[in-house]
Length: 401
Image (cartoon, rainbow, N blue to C red; front, side, top):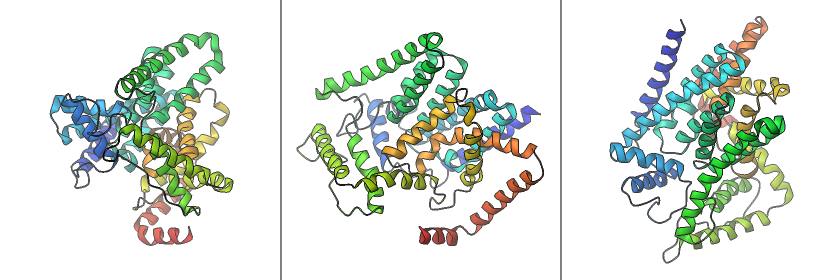
């Protein structure tokens, strides 16, 4: 029976992702951030180095190197890269099952896989050329390796995770702090291995940037640009009327470092002129955007699990020591809400862990029978009704907000 369940989940996951990749939306050329990753990957494959044509450190190296490897093997094929990203997503199902089964049992692990397989936020990712593809896989691998006590693999996956998206440092520091807190003497070796891998990876990146720019650059040269752009939109919603010029590429006759310094001054000036009230309100507005269900279409699969994910987080709060890798993942979300703009696109990396908590909650409530089952069914029917009437409901919600 389990074999048939797995066949159903695998077929659903593969079918939805492949269907989206082959759809008109999935066949569109890269846009916005994806164009930078795509160009860097092509340059890596061509042996021209890790750059986008104008800048050398505008993105962390993990995902461009991954794309470069795909393009080197399969040619500069958009479809080949998307196909490999689908395989990464399917491999991620194994980690989701193991993580769910470890904490809540095999039924919860399988249901979490089913939720993830069918979720819009998850199945559209392989069609994009965004770092979320590698990031989700490495985040799942990092949690899995922590649970299994595979120190070397945990260190490698966490270091590669940081080299893919650098907000992952919050999760890594949280995990290391928890290992030290739970039993420093027993976990000392694990802490040293993970830290050693992280330092080695980052040292290579810092050295490479020093060779090019003769400057200590542990992150990227667009960090201040991203800080500005992600917060300016929120501040404007809260009353900010000023506007500053931000650079996404060096101006003619200037260098990448000139761009970085100009953006740093612009970002500092933006935050300096914000009143404290606006700075305190901004994270709550960012949380609202993260939870917002219209993309502009109604995100039906996300809204189905939203309350059950939140209920699961609350229900397991007393087991936070045991569940620290799961809660550690959401420390990244807390950092995004405080510092960046947690737009709905950023739900993708957290979705596997939302699915695990939601699956555990759904199974628990369903087993209690009676009103609990009626409430679950009613929530599904309500969301189906909103999906049918998505356009007028969206206009209504926007008019209220």
